[in-house]
Length: 352
Image 1 (cartoon, helix red, strand yellow):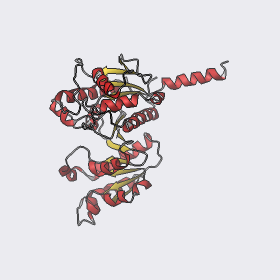
Image 2 (cartoon, helix red, strand yellow):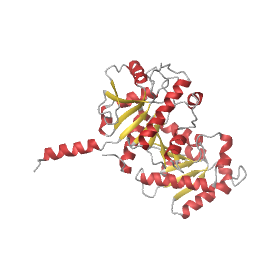
Image 3 (tube, helix red, strand yellow):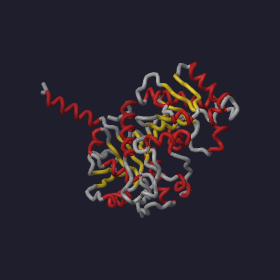
Image 4 (cartoon, one colour):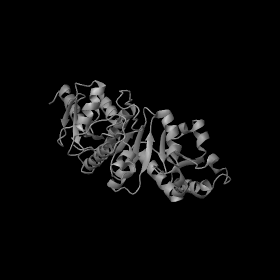
């Protein structure tokens, strides 16, 4: 019969084997993505909960490591079996066959956009082929990707299409505030025509399901924001609340969801009313992300809910102005890695 120490060792080994396997995309090689990845992956405690592989370019990572003074790092090729196990050894899967790339910190370029896009594509392949349990995407430049000739509106849209998801929702997650978006990366002029009662109802279904299934919240409460100033003020300042948003809320309530609103966005955030709810549903990108980033820029996470694939990302962008200066914070990247591992384990999709 095994003694207590033997049992503890076995339990520890079993837990190690169940650490989720996370593909981390490089992001724009000229931005801060590689830097925040390296900062996060050199923290020893991270390896207690996950096994990472960086999808991108070994040469790019080495250049960023030089700036950070991380000469001790060893970059090894990913062979489909061995993932990162410790903070001084990082496994790298090349995003494209030709790996030569000269980093130009802070510069917008087509080749940089191509490398960043190919990293996302290859990481998505790994997830669809069940070689990894989740994806964490470092920030890239949509303009750079467009310059490279690749069609790409955003990570959410691309991964959703590849995963065959008919409905998903962008969620911004933090301990202080969680926000879901009805519309994502579209121009402000298109928002009004892009919202409908059925569409909002679907987003509420997706948001509620994610809060329950991926975050373990029973009977989550959701606040819905209006579209217009003062939530339309009874139709004087806009009709979308009365004709679209209120019917969606009523329909969701009839299905048993706990939903309130529509609330005027300025007063809702100004009085911190969000603290009474598990999540907030915003009508458009900046309506939700400006207040979110105001309270959780260094710790928040972008999570794409409703996908069969687990995907998270830091909430910041490429920050070209900070690239190559060794000043970027890795807080949001660390949070993105931790949340991806947590959700992967909760979904029980981790491969043994």
